[in-house]
Amino acid sequence: MQSDVRNPQTPSGRRVLVTGGAGFIGSHLSEKLLSRGDFVALVDDFNEFYDPRTKRENCAHFLKNRHVQLWEGDIRDSEFIHNAFSSFQPDHAVHFAARAGVRPSLQDPVLYQSTNVAGTLNVLEACRAFAVKKLTFASSSSVYGVNSKIPFAERDLLSQVISPYAATKVAGEAFCQSYSHLYGVKTTCLRFFTVYGPRQRPDLAIHKFARLIDSGRPIPVFGDGHTKRDYTYIDDIIAGVLSAMDYQDTPFEIINLGDSNTVELIYLIRLLEDAIGKKATIDWLPEQPGDVPVTFADISKARDLLGYSPKTMIEDGIGKFVEWFKAVSAPSLA
Image 1 (cartoon, rainbow, N blue to C red):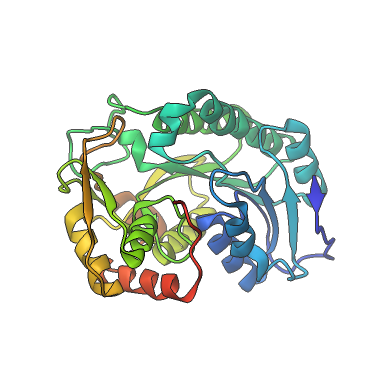
Image 2 (cartoon, rainbow, N blue to C red):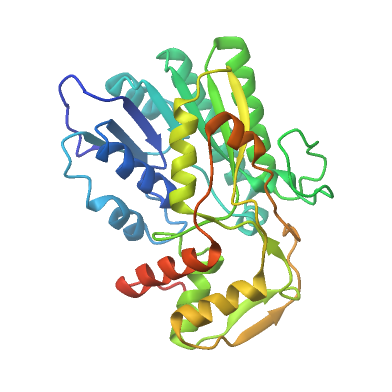
């Protein structure tokens, strides 16, 4: 279904179609593109993975911009995707729409396959049909699985993929590469490492922990609290995505976007406690299937090809997140 669609005249900037454009990262990117004069077709199905009102709030403040279109529908619907591309005629496409999360993918792998693999194929088919100049695809650090080599580099063999979610992202990258080779769909796949910041999904650890600590409820910690993640602040990710959209030197690339720094879970909890001003009560739980002990990005390729250089340290980023968290009414997942 197409809704709230405007038909701008000849654009001064690029025409960019963003799937998943109302989500955490997608809404930040859409907002940035509009602020610099691009025209944006925002594609989202507002599903109930978490409260759809949250995603509508993410984009409500910029949907009044006459340079944006909202296409509400499912990427699994090939006719819907074809119509969106046909009507908007994008120069660039950014494919963020996906079923996210390692643990939920264990419960419904078929849904993850249909959305993340078949849905990606629909987007690639549309890019091919309408001669889109560039596709930027959101992959994930989860593809590295329990990689024994630290830090993770793009050339590493993906031999330890341990969740359906990760498997769908590996498949998405493979289809992107094949469409680049066969049909000339120039593509950059970005492997994101634990993105956080304002508007972060309410099911993700930083947001969930902040809400529980603030309300005095226990936070669930799986394992011993010493797992490590490469947390990347949203502004740094958006800077990397914009550079990747502009990158044209090769027909296909896979590039890590992370902070290239690991943070132990127990230290992250302490940062949240300090920023919120309350102590956490921890509910210690067994390790979960599909979880990996560490993520750590080698970002030398991103530095070389994109000029990527993350600026936000975790201590500052958590402070900025909590400032936003306190200013809004966070949705409840109780």
